[in-house]
Length: 224
Ligand SMILES: O=C(O)CCC(=O)C(=O)O
Image (cartoon, rainbow, N blue to C red; front, side, top):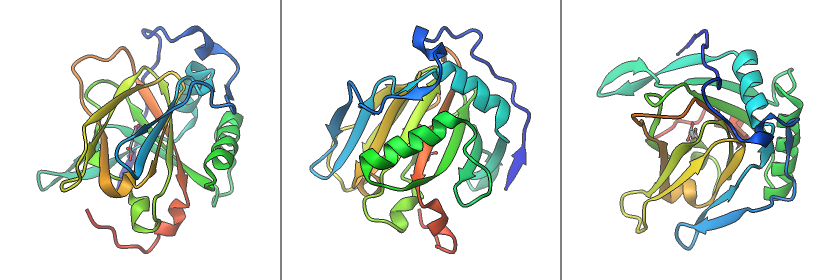
């Protein structure tokens, strides 16, 4: 279940970098990108400042999207999820909320050879907002799904750890201001990720998750 909510966050007190106010566009050259191999079959790509105009994108998405707050099970109780979310799918009749998102979808689909046809948005209003350790549901219907995340707003720590039984080290990536982070290979099968709570953040962060055929999950029974 999800309740609609009014959103009252801005980047006013957060000083983004200069090109965060440029006209929004994507860097189709993936300049400065680097791949981290978590093990022999799982990887994470990070491309700094992949999306220019990130502060403008942040402001427009906060204002335009229909934000909701879902409920999640925690300690055997249903509690409000500590972040706001919104969703878009190419199966609906509306275009992406901003032209730069259509551009990103096309650039990412070409580069990673995946039809990213849905976008999940997550708004972390302050350091109390978070998402717990998990792997993404695409893993139940696809082998080695690729999930691409563009972060706008203030940087937050994106953490990665191996699932129980998988050998590997904990990693963390600081992402915001238009940075792209892509999880691929066996990442969703063998690894988990989270955005932990933190005492202090320089401002809110919004993650834009490009997903591959989420609609395929209809009717699939999900496991933990
Ligand atoms: O906000 C992020 O960068 C990650 C969110 C996430 O992992 C999820 O919603 O499944």
